[in-house]
Image 1 (cartoon, helix red, strand yellow):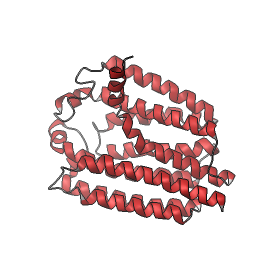
Image 2 (cartoon, rainbow, N blue to C red):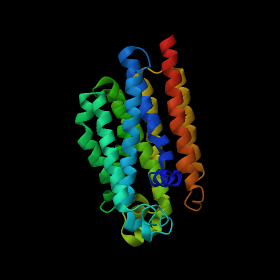
Image 3 (cartoon, rainbow, N blue to C red):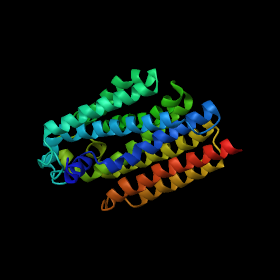
Image 4 (cartoon, rainbow, N blue to C red):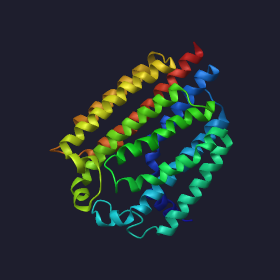
Length: 293
């Protein structure tokens, strides 16, 4: 496969957006290891297979999203140039990528523990089901949040083989974070969604109210970030990172308003990329500090 072809498939699944969910999966993995073993290091085996599972899950989800939504994307000027509607990747090729990714995900889950493997069918339902939700309900953003939040809980379960309060709170953090950022992103397509019967919070409530809903969702995200620290017995370094993340969320809402959506992409990608990396950095420093002291 040529370099150009590989780039086409990477663009198809927006591989660079893996930076959103993967740091939270690592955070869950490190915090679970800290609670279970007294150190933040889960071992290379867990690290490698969590990475493979998360990358495969996200590739499957994005591939399915693109091929299922190809007719909607073709009608939208903002998305008509995407790989499937533009013909750069055929639907059959996209589905093949989805199937291979799900097989890799299943193999990775089997290398971790029985609970990871047992939860696989439910994970597949959420991964593949998201594109359909926008056809029926404006709560599609919540479905996406639950799906992506499973990465954080999955990192925890990969270490312990069971749920725990820390896993649930981490999951909730990502749920409300994703709801807020996806609502902000959906404001760009509000008029198209209304005209084409696509359900979303901006289409249902209008852009001003949608941005207020996103702000409330992100306020809950910040509160839950603090709760993660309480539940996991985090050190000062984690709370410092949480304050930085709160500042990033505030910045995100300061640069987007109903009268100026020009910086939605900055809020969606740049700000949230730094938020996810700050989360991971805070957890790494926190568990290292607690391990050493």
